[in-house]
Image 1 (spheres, rainbow, N blue to C red):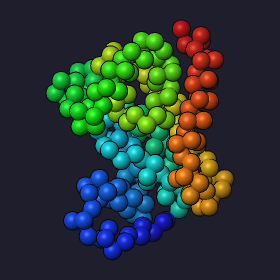
Image 2 (spheres, rainbow, N blue to C red):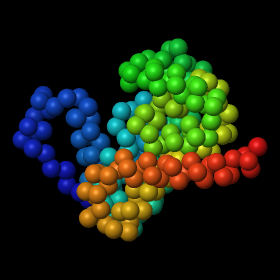
Image 3 (tube, helix red, strand yellow):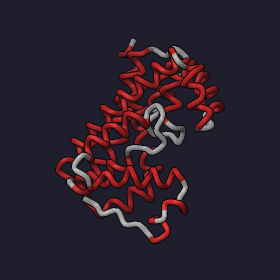
Length: 211
């Protein structure tokens, strides 16, 4: 497993922001026996409330054991979809008490409103890109429930888009090993955008079959 190295300043929790401390807490699971369990839990929570994306833990786990990279990606995908379902339920039944405050915490109200229009204009594109855009995935899941998006379509499209993201990372590490880590970190946004376009194109091709 990767060793998490911290600077002298990072060892002083009082000098770190809470998000940075949370980031290192997530990363620290890469060296623990319960890392895969933590990965699943973090992927689940990130889909409706948690601020740190599971990629932070997925990458070091895959590097530490490349032969199990796809296994870790599968854990990430299942957890993320399950969490997405919870986010959908929050948006559908508990928006005023839970969903709204979550959106406010992440300054997601504007994105939420625009997603409502996007769902009406093109559900496939809106949800198909959900796993790859800078907008937190939790905003998509809560919005989908709040705007009464078809539950079956939500689960199916979310599963494909989230799997595409996580298996892309795992596949690169499986093929190229630890030397690809820097490349992923540097070009991750570009990689996900390109892959998102491919996923959306695939959805548009099969869309007639979904009716």
